[in-house]
Length: 487
Image (cartoon, rainbow, N blue to C red):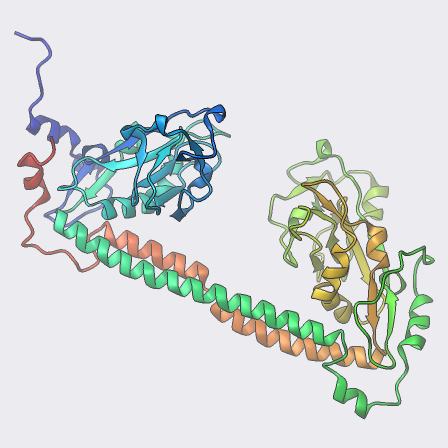
């Protein structure tokens, strides 16, 4: 008699059931908690070599190609058709999972008609028997569990997950008909949410265009055309400039002369930024001196799209650091910080952020320029956010293929549309009112977090049997399993 007794289907099923004490939460009576591996299998990809890649062939989906519902073969590398293997084949609707690296746990649903192959560490979670597990239900479950999957990862800085880990997850399995009803309802909900997200993004783009148009008109003098007609007896920009120059802390240096981008109204004057603002470049603090606490150093990563985010990868210097450097490169209230380095041709820098309040000492890191306008601070700040300024700023861009730079000297050379002081005050008021109204509307539409919360709520309810789709007359899924649908 053989020592290795073959287990019966009943015994295998009992092993796959999740004990009551391990069940995460209650589910309807005709559902059952099973190990995910009973109904689905995670298949790891093949280790293709870069020398295998070619111009024509079958696409290979790598971790970098996993992009949620937009996972396609469009940007995939290719290998010869001789590598075609049914085991590693990806078809439309397959759920893919990143199994290692910084994006471990990232999921994607393959959305191309063209079949593809999966690269190593790309997991394809395939249902074992479609009569028991509906693909769309499985995909929604993995999407909901992606954060939990990441928590299961091992390996520290380079996390990894295995097929056994995924297959051990407790899985709420309803009858097949209920799975279809749940998946259909989720799909309808998510379609509406995605439509709402798209409308929000379109509205934001409209706001950006309107804001750019407002600023463009402001610095052409078009916002105050009627105001000028009613205020003819005012001090000219020429006189205003002379008074500003007397306030400068340092004498003006040489500039690179450039042609003004457009004609200004009578009484206005093109000047250079160095003539109406003091400037201070940051310091190359050494990374080996950084600490976890102390005095924060403002780096370029803290300036993004004209927003100061001090919580993004903060670094600090000890409180007893060199006092001379601390005093020389301290950020002051009212300073406008401008990032000077980024990716060449992408215009992902040149962002201006005004420091409204300084509760704790902040230090200025290298490749950031601090500008302190001598007057009309709002007008100056709005100009640095305008399309006119950004076009002039990037006209000075230099650097290698991957890194773009604009020097502080070049910034000093950028021309500035100086209005008479009284008119500048009026422009500040008009822009402030218009932009505050735009922001109020934008905040009403900025409900991305709420939509994400709604999505998670829907998915949570779905896998608890709380969407109102469950029918008690459905045959128990346990009976279906016992009937031998799974081999």
